Length: 93
Image (tube, rainbow, N blue to C red; front, side, top):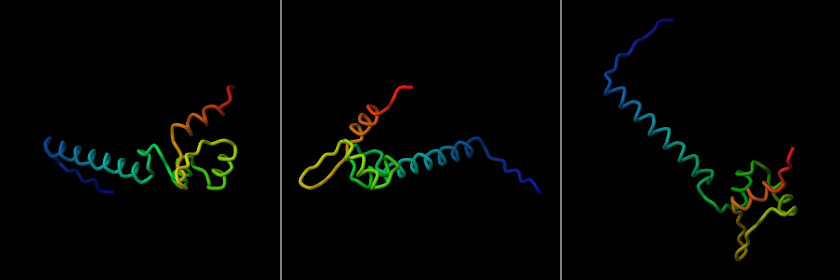
């Protein structure tokens, strides 16, 4: 296989690094927004995604005491409360 060598000035290399870094950071932020990792309060679908479980399993966890916020028929889940609840279930070795 033939090898190709590309020569770049320090300025060009620096510009490429900045562009790649900006692109990566933008994509990370877009992904976080898509899965609502920046939001504290989540709906049921977002909560399933956050906990990586099915809707049926989430319903089961709710019956077992997973904290739920209900306001005028709207259900929300607080990430902080969920994390505390899970931490309480954690068993020491």
